[in-house]
Amino acid sequence: MIAPCLFGRLAAISRNVEDLSRSVSFYCQRLGFGLAGSAYALDARSAERLGLGGYRLNAQRLRYGGEQIELVEVGNKGRPYPADRTSADLLFQHFAVRRPDIEEACRTLFRGDIDAPLPGLITYAGSTGVAAAVTLPAGSGGVAAFKFRDPDGHPVELIRLPSDIDDPVRLTPGIDHSAISVSDMERSIQFYENIFGLSVGGRQCNHGPEQCALDGLEEATVDVVALLASAGRGPHLELLGYRIPLGRKPEHDPAPADIASDRLVFEVHADSDRAIVGTDFCQDPDGHFVMIEII
Image (cartoon, rainbow, N blue to C red; front, side, top):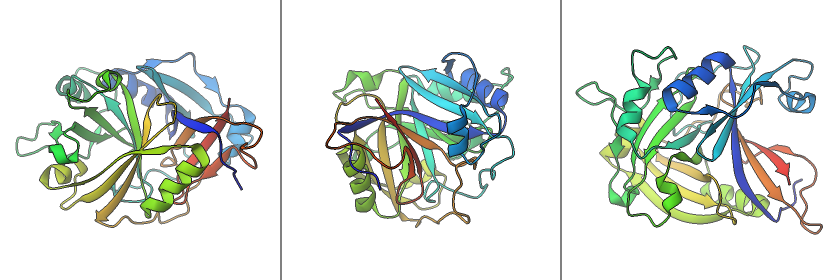
């Protein structure tokens, strides 16, 4: 049982990879991430959380803007990312990299003179076969976005926000959000509100040909809810509730060492009356993994 915290913020995304060197090369050379310190061995407690106690697990933190991700090398100890999964499926989790120069970012993703592995496509390339961002209509947020996969199959998104938003920080390069697909929107809202003190910052329903092209789906209608930290810092969390197509549950119960098992890392401040108790590693109602760091 986890009691509510005073407030929480999404501090990082921790991601399992098969080959650390390959993934660092991809994120740094093709997406512009930088090293946040040296590579390190995951501590024994963290390895135990992943069900891999006794193994040496190498990890690397990467920085983009003011935000960080953590890559953890699990090799072949977990299941690979399922090849036929889409953004509607309930194991889906991505993070969105904010790029005001999204056209240049798309070109860099596919440059042939870079040694790093090429991405896999999610967003339709269109009749020209050239990778390009999709601009959603104003009713769906008006963002320009492009979805793709990293060398392990993890979904990633490039995003450019409309220039008329009233938050100048969100117009600069950084990690904008992490999005997860959920089966029951209100249940998931309650989970993240009650435990981490997040609050609903916006709701919209995305549909139409632009959303289909972005998701690489023939039909797509999705409710999107943005959850914000009370302190208003760092990436926010987006909940995706697909009406069409309905999301499939994973074929196997997700294990922490599976390649698809990203972890939302929340920093929380707790007081004596509303302390987090019981665990610092849990799953949300749809099985997405959450790590809790009390500060």
